[in-house]
Length: 140
Image (cartoon, rainbow, N blue to C red; front, side, top):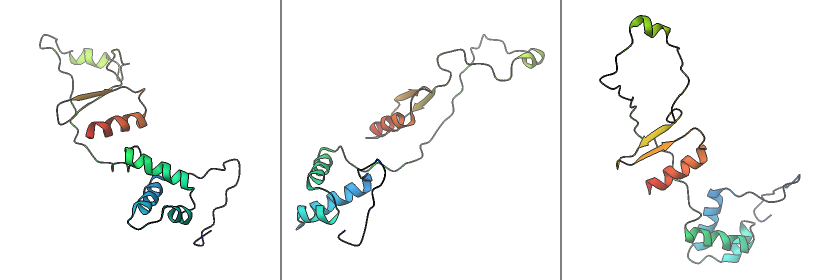
């Protein structure tokens, strides 16, 4: 307790969980001109070895701020019917089920076309975390 802060660790979890922002801030303090590494570690109540590890991760590029979320332009594209395929009559269309079950492999997929023309097809089984990583890698 160097600056009036007290952290009480209770229960089974004994390790502190550092937010990414805190890690980057502490590493930046240690990298500042004239900063003493051991003093910065003690001031922030982090071991010198952990601070040294974070510093190495920052230098390797493994520990960096996440890019802010951004909206991307979206264009909805519907599949084109072949010109030879007749459209159903109104009576036949009324007998069609309202919500047909997906029949092909493309059902449940999202296709994202990037500005450079490359396409990304994502199925329902892909997690949001994995999708974010892929999109972030494609933006670089």
